Image (cartoon, rainbow, N blue to C red; front, top):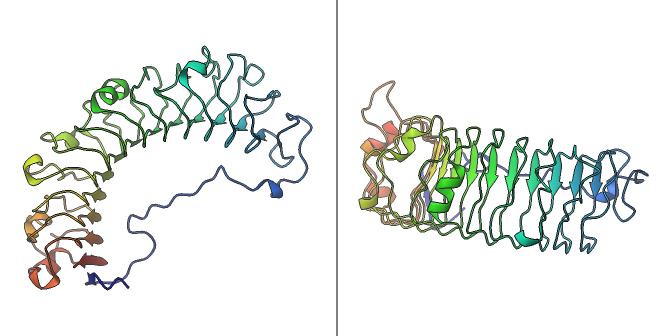
Length: 340
């Protein structure tokens, strides 16, 4: 138990957000057994996964020969600093290409090496030396990850009608470069722009988004009704920014589809109003001085109450003795409310 906090109702099961992450790409090579003969000699192609080729942690400086029939290619934790245009000419039906933790630069990725892969669904180039997004990319792409690079510019994503997940966290992006590039992605559901250099929310983001992470930037204000244009936004993170009361219009976060909202580590003195459907609300380490029930419940009644399950208020100027009695009626289904 955290002695620095007071928990009013205690029934926390699992993570507060209900979201957990698992690396499905990682399986120890020791369980694979004998390698298939249809494989680059330095790599491993398990007989139990004959269409996968694992070339991780081999100190490779270039992409090895990839034989026909391989659909899932792993080249993680090597020293690959270039990709020739013909690197994948034997496997134009490749579906997953994982290049995390290498030394790739944009100038050394030649020609249309990715767009030739007409069945590619997943492309990961995390932890490299990219300064802009790679491309052109095939229309088949569903999952693009370019995290932990030095990207300050996004190229065109036009025509990527299937692109659903985009990870761009830990780069050097500013709002203007994001706005132009992502505008036309009509299938985009997940976008992570955390740990970048944005001072404003990017305009024109696809209305299809369900998850939007913008934490650890320098955002100080929210345009009026910015989030209401999204069709079904459910998860929103804006923690570790520079948000203060004056930069947040009254109903900015009163979005009926929203289930989780993280505004922790900002400069808020009042609790922003949210919709009754919100389930997880994180406001720790702000400058909150008072708790107003109307931020959660417009009216109170047998069928009128907040669906909040987890509420974090610790690290503010609130104490449990300063909470109003009618708070319990409004937050009647809460499992955890944490204050100083």
